[in-house]
Image (cartoon, rainbow, N blue to C red; front, side, top):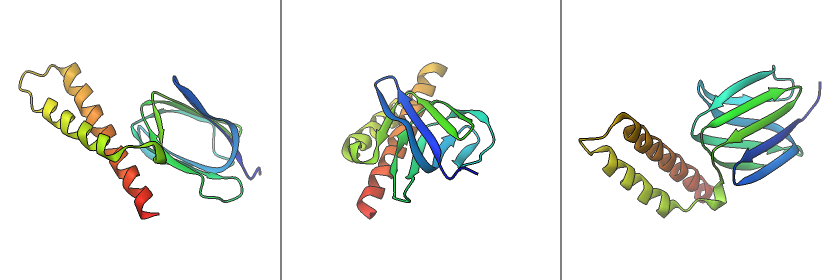
Length: 141
């Protein structure tokens, strides 16, 4: 069995990794958090806003960040992640995320929200909370 995976992470604004050798990948899918290790069964899934993490091939800590909606595919020890947005832990501005949370909460309190706007504010709130969670982990390290 192969000891590593080849990880590609893409978003419209950037290519974070291109077939980088890693030991493991953790993503937030529609069914919850999933950890992908070498030898994982082939699958395709939906991404939800949440954390992502990968561990480098040499056992180093790798990277931690926030990824938003999109898709992922696992096939023959290759993992491809296509996300709407990607932010690494060090790129997150915690105060901006807190402001986004407050703005989303204010928007959700509007009485005349249609379903589309409600969903939009709900996703913004979720993203801001995950970003704050990931940013706080940086200070714990």
